[in-house]
Length: 209
Image 1 (tube, helix red, strand yellow):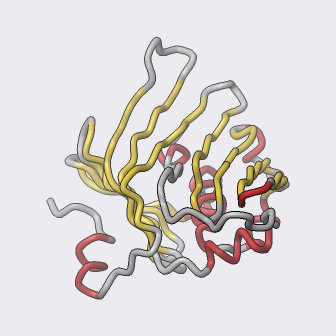
Image 2 (cartoon, helix red, strand yellow; image 1 turned 30 degrees about the horizontal axis):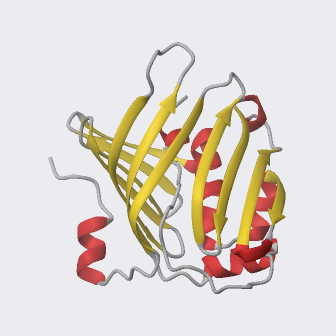
């Protein structure tokens, strides 16, 4: 699976919802994400593959600025950056950089139209590519399952599962058709992060060579 399919989210901390909150609906959940000013978090990602005895682990930071900028700076096991901005996905590490057109790369588009469109609260874009099922409970607890429905994505990804409480996404899991999966855990989450012009220029870029 190309690197961009593993660029996933699991947010574990944020402001707790009020007691007795009504069960979430898909519209209300996406509206809360749509109102989020930005996000910053640390991540620990595990890529679990049947051919490996132990998962591949990476760590770093994630940053999001609405409506469509997202960057992941990996620090371990080796420095690298994935940047989504202006309909393009760019990757950079010590060896150089490359740019992918989202429309011409179904795996990159899957990532953008799942993770990024959820953060942007864009229901129309999500429904165009996924069958969505939301299970909501008391206390603002919810589970969201996405199944790709546009070829060739269903041949690669079986489902994407998210669970959370209010604005807090507790887990996100990508399950591939062959059984491999990627799970990422986030800590030190700031779901009210705002980036000024100077911070944006510093954060949302590929590393200098």
